[in-house]
Amino acid sequence: MTPQELANLAHLRRARDFIDREYARPLDVPTMAAGALMSPAHFSRQFKAAYGESPYNYLMTRRIERAMALLRAGTSVTDACMEVGCTSLGSFSSRFTEIVGVTPSEYRSREHHAVKAMPTCIAKQQTRPERNGNKNLSRIEEAPASQLQ
Image (cartoon, rainbow, N blue to C red; front, side, top):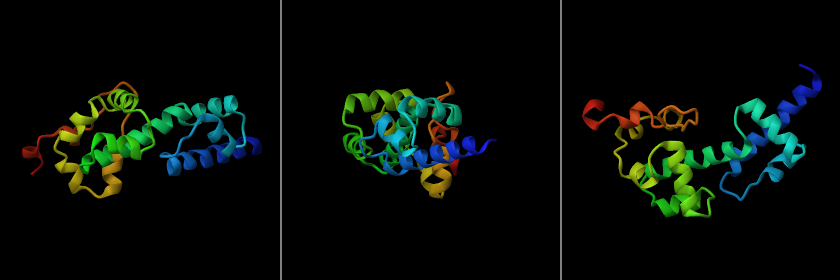
């Protein structure tokens, strides 16, 4: 790798870390790109090449991931929506359903015994939403409580 490529990766990592920290703030691609010292178009191309998804999709996945944790804890769908930085409940619900595979209300009403018994770092890894066309909910979350004992 050239020194420039290494510098670009460092800038992209910094932007990704910024998204991870500030996901609840109103963020757009120009704001994210500024943190990486790149133009929005160049940033979007480089981010997708490095991480396999667009900056906006990455942001929304982080928001949905956090919303899943809030819903497992019993937070209302509306409160979870607002707490993760989404301003439209309809758009949030549509995106949640697209990423997770069930509506936020359905996800909230499910039992999450296995996830609650895990250390937080493991639960986060096991419940991370995926966009690759696979069934979105993890096997752990789908298992009936009787199978978990």
